[in-house]
Length: 535
Image (cartoon, rainbow, N blue to C red; front, side, top):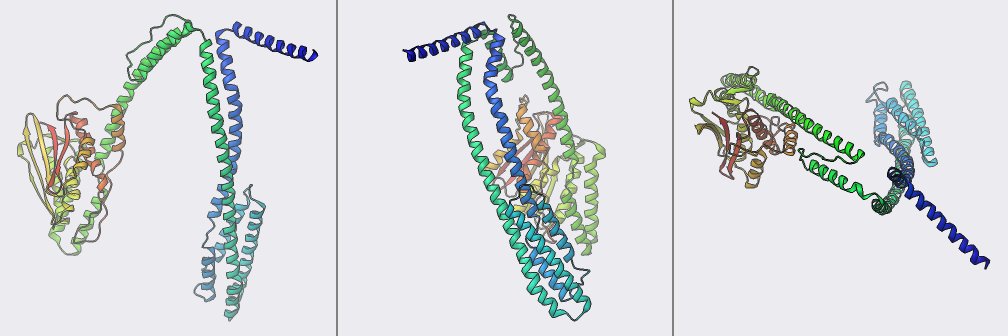
């Protein structure tokens, strides 16, 4: 009876406690309930997070110390034995004087590494002893070095010095190397042990997080049921507004008048949307200015390898006594740079651009006289058409390095043009190797030219990708004239699209989206690049 009475009393106490908790929760305000739910959810996670951070910091600190010790040990040259033995031998056979040798310096450097390693706080007793042994070995090597120096000063002590070198120096340096290898090995073993401990710890953390997520989901589901349904409608409305904003629709506005808190939230959301619109407009303007600046910077860059190779060819011709070709090449180079500068103008005439590309082709024809022929046949009436500076030269360069040079016997680069339907078409053709269909498709997709007037502007994501690509300069490819030594590289196979891309972007920024480049090619027969400009 007493047992049953005790059990009943305990059950009544539990029921009373549950009743008091239920009444307390029911009497709490919505704000208090939300705060309590946050406290119940966050407090255990906060405690666990602190424990995890402390443990992780301790393990990471220990691991970092081990890595630091291993890094210091790696600065100790494992070639110390062979270097020190050989340097000592050179001194003994008097190939070097004692003042010229680096024995003292090598010992000093080794002692510095050992002292640095000794400062590590987490060294095992065995590794501490190994460092002490290395220190003693280095002291012995210093003693042997002093004895050899004294014998050299005394003279006629070759046999004695050789005996010291064979029986003392080589043995001690071998001990230094072996002991240091053991030190590094056991430090790595300690690192592996710490890594395993950290892996076990992280596994436990992930397990706990998984369980905690399940518990939190259940707890949040329970809380959502007990929260007043009167706020669900405006909250859902706000949710729809934010989803539309996240989808890019900044014309939407939150129309909520009921509820003080939600009204303030809706007003703040509307203000935020307006501010986002203003910031996006500002960012677009700034990005456009940045892209323009980057393109102008790339436009102003001149490939240093082309200059190096040209000067190298001039030197070769001068050494060969070919003064006429030297003078012609220097004139072409001077004209090339004069038109490249263009008196600071960003836009030049087609006439000036053809003069610039003609100078480039004259220089390259001298360098590649066995494989390169060219023709420039653009009608004179197109001479005053406006074109961004340094537009044709990168295209001609691609035709040479990726077309003509890749076929046996060389080929011809032809520059022509015509005016039609209010537009100007300039064609750069070569009868070189051509482009594979897959690669051609990739190039034209990257250029993204639409031959219509009302092309839709690229999305912001495309613009970011273009800005990132234009930040890369054209890489280099070897240019090896048949008559001279190997020259510096000027272009790489993977870099050809960036030169075309830069030209294409500059044309589009100056004249609009309908203008730019288009590439046509047939593998094995040649390539034609079309430059579309306004007349």
